[in-house]
Length: 415
Length: 83
Image (cartoon, rainbow over all chains, first blue to last red; front, side):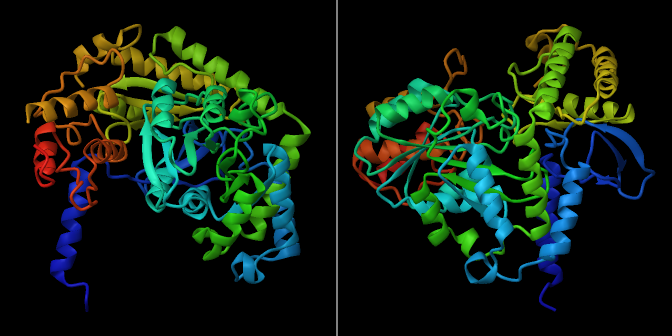
């Protein structure tokens, strides 16, 4: 036995440290399809509870849509379960090419390449397209998968203060001698729910001869008039050189991701991106479902429009009730509580009342910025949101935080 | 040395504090363990020092501990004969 008692002790101690630092993650067990109402077992083995889900990335409510399920089933019947190969040996079907073409059309780009996940797309793209003479200049709040991808790439790394265009401009000036400059940002930032200033970023990119990379995982399908993303919202469709996005959130919620953009960039990824080359791609069932998702959202903006309506109701409701929320227009709505324990206590009380939302605190978000992040879905009906709002107000009253300033909440609960 | 210290302190303030941020940063303020600079943002500090003093700081030297305060950074620079 090589896993000796002393080795086991090392891991036990490390896990204990994770628990002590407050970042140990307990999983709640869902015993129903993903939706606005779910059956949850928490802790594992306890009685199931019906709760309203306020924390899924199921923005368009397509995770369990009957048409998507039927398409996935058809995919299983006609293209089988697995490919048992990477793409370039014998792992590419007609439906994979269809999905790549549909994504290209939807995102308004030149070409698209699928990845097993957007995490993989972000992990692979930089190393595949940049040499050590290039520089990557990233917003400081980009997603962890981008940070990892940048670390795997030998190009120089730099970053700028979150959404601070003056700082970005300084960095672009500083790196004028680099062979290639790549500005890197999320489209919608997942923790604060704000949007990158893509119009300004494109302007700076043109001025300083830089390429632009945007991760649209929290935007694809619903940001912009027809849901194409942050680039549509800011009127810069066709001007983003590299887009990565996921099929694991609004676009069906199963799994898979892609790099979409300039055709040479996509071609380079097909030749060199390691997560693409050395891993099977998305299975036929998921590809078939995703093809249907793109068909649905290209046919009508109904679900995107409903999500927008739900978002307006929810943001207005929380604000009028006296909560402090991060302002914005996305369906990611963080309710600011500042104190870590307060965020946990309120999330626990909400759960008791049948509302499932999660508290986030340091190190997931900066110190003193603990919050409950709520996320809207087109699957939410008005009665769900009214019930959730009532539960929030009840908790807000109990903890005495309604109509209080940030400082008053901090004075009462500490940081 | 105090010149070097002040150059670094000034850079840290400009690079990492937001406008209107009234947090006080001194030579000894913990930057990384104190949550002012995260490990990702730290790269720009390394880049600044390398450009400013025309040196190459190896990754095993540019650790979060070595960059955790202005005083610590000054100690790192001493290894490169920068006083």
